[in-house]
Image 1 (tube, rainbow, N blue to C red):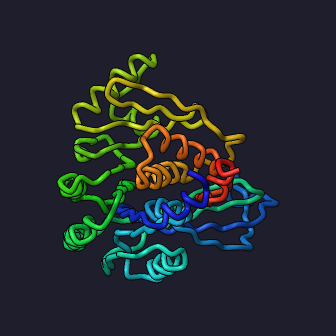
Image 2: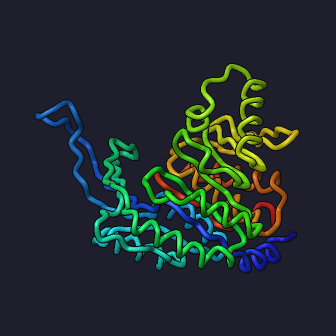
Length: 315
């Protein structure tokens, strides 16, 4: 398939992203002296930048490929929530944000000086049960029209009903991808693929000493949770795809790892895009791996464009 044909095919795909969306705020400045109050640098902020974070960054990675994407999540009824909504609209993402007036929009503030992140400051709390019930109802309205459903779990409380959502999507034979969080993976039962990193998987499986031991543990997990596969992201070691009867390893394509912020968002987003046009899982992982190699070479929560990802293949 050439690049022109691929671009046209992508335009017909619809992906529904559900999860914990947040506002990423960057304070850029210079740090030329140490504070007299404590042994910390003093940062003189000269630029503020806002980006979509969490599930919002997943949706942004998808829409950058020319795919139709809907974002279902909860935001606060505050100024930051308005900013989040505006960013979605400006990016061409269809917003299905439900406003919780008792909630403060989740914000991650990163302070950066001389191209180095010095500190991250998080502001967050959890949505109310009434709002989460509304999210479940809205999901029921949206799921039938989606080709792929992506759940982006950042552990912020927005996916309390994920088990019911997965069951509903599975009953409609939808492809379901989950970027997991926490140690309770039972709630992801029945998903098509989950995409944990090493630390996340270790919190569920415990330590392993050999690749054979890891493979056995992942196989048992996959069977217990009725998953098609597990895609383990391994930073500089690349990725490993575990399916029934097979394990495939993919070396990293990153030339230099500068910042891993949001790389997992890119992986699951591009995986969804490629599965949405019926790529087989192995070729979908190759594209996701290439995309991750691009974004880790950028500062902060980043995305890859269609041309960056596919132009080389279209030469």
